Length: 423
Image 1 (cartoon, rainbow, N blue to C red):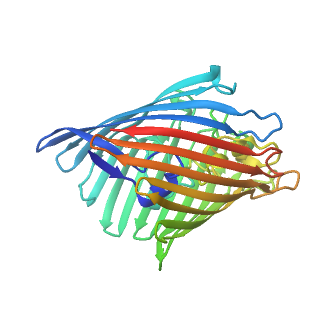
Image 2: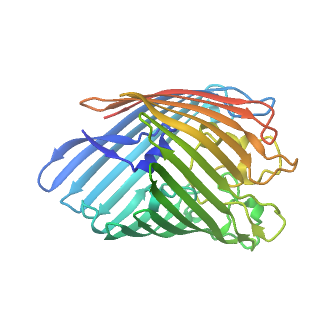
Image 3: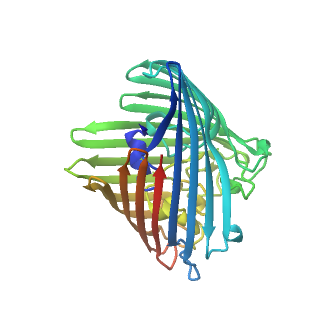
């Protein structure tokens, strides 16, 4: 069995989700010039939760079952290919918002060819369907599956340059509705930078009030750009990761994108414990009627510091008005401020847990003059055991939101047990 690991930052961010920090591969054929391997995973989870703070909000009971199958090949020292598909069958027993009580999706999550030295030297390239970590692990603005290509050049051990382009599917199978994203980045030993632009040929005059990434609405928006600069490293015994993002470009109705976002995390190792402090902020729009879009707009981010508010999207169910884009799907941390204290610790060789408390608020007050959305408590548990044929992971995720005035009248909660088997 072969195990490929994510970067330390990617693994830390993904800890609160069901996705593993590593996955198993089984070699099925190998000679001097070719190696072929398989990756298979089955995941079954049961979810009990309430994600609607309204007085008439329902408690939800659902299964979410996934099957992943991948096949890869390595040719000599320079070429690799990988294909993976995922079948997701969500069954919801109580919530009418899921069509007919159940749904199933087949998604190709990877289908790419790589070129590059196995030692990461010199020029590297990838073309196909993929979802990569970008420079320095930046994920506030964009990290998502796309169909495209990217090239990297390792100038030295401490400097890597990258250029990439691709399309994001937005509205079914109509390629005319897809968005084009392009980026350039540079990553050094600690410092990194990223510049990206996502484009959509919206008809002139499309109001910026239609901004958003919900495929159920007319979400054409113009040209949205973003500059990110970050630093990741250690100051003594303190690990630090900090990043600043600045939007630029023009909406379809001529307004200027001026949103900003920042993120900082500090952690340290204390025996089996790794306590942390996390701060994240996305700007809101203090005057929707002027010529600026000041709320931070993401292309398709991947920043999920809390289980219920962010990962499960409960923040979209706010019952108050004038809260900006948080009522739309996939809006990231636009108009959101988060302060979190947490601790990841190894209970025993197979059990890892994470406890956190997060203060969540609007960056700009709503029409009632309120900002405080609530406090979320999370207890995330992972039990992992490697065998000779694969890996078994059990998990139980628990979350509770003490709702505040800017969010809704009732508290929210989630209980999510599950099992994932990889071989």
